[in-house]
Length: 285
Image (cartoon, rainbow, N blue to C red):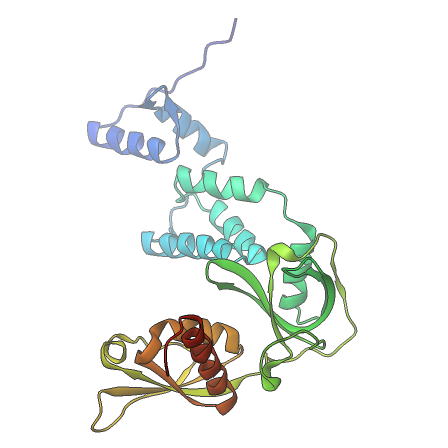
């Protein structure tokens, strides 16, 4: 037979009892479907719930950290996410549901190569990696600058590499690569004895937006200037980019509402793409 559990009897007002029951529910301490104040008090006594007379964190601070924790996970920054998670677990104000989410995340084993990759980037340490491209070919890259980013809901390593063979971008950007993280084999990352670069290669592009696109456009962090053209319903944007591929993926769907002005080599690529489309649909020029 199981031993009966001791209960705690408290002489408190109905208002205080309701408050304690609410806190017990917040921490998931229940007997069946009802809040269990005894379990709540026991958890405080055993320091499973931390309390403090002062220095309590505001709801705004906790919410900001919660959002930051989930954002770091979404961005693939697992080391930073674990650090924020550990910080939140130290706080008694954290709700039971959020605590469970953090604990489940902390219990998951981290992929070793991914941790090594993040550590190299954080320490600004160049590294080598093996990569399997879309055709199944395995290639080696020496990464001298990198960052984990999202492109179209996938995680990529945007990086500057010594290798340029097979890069279809223009000459000024041929050292920049976007490598899908899910195509990096395990145990494929190792230290390289090379200098770290401060950034990817970048070029400046200028493009015009017309009509409703000009009105609805939202300025991006990479934009250097944003000017309405005098006498025209046209908005001219100047931006620094690291990849013509991702830039064209953004602007080509806008069709005639967007015109690239400079540089000429990327403008020529757009012209060729339009010509190929005209040919494909057998449209007379």
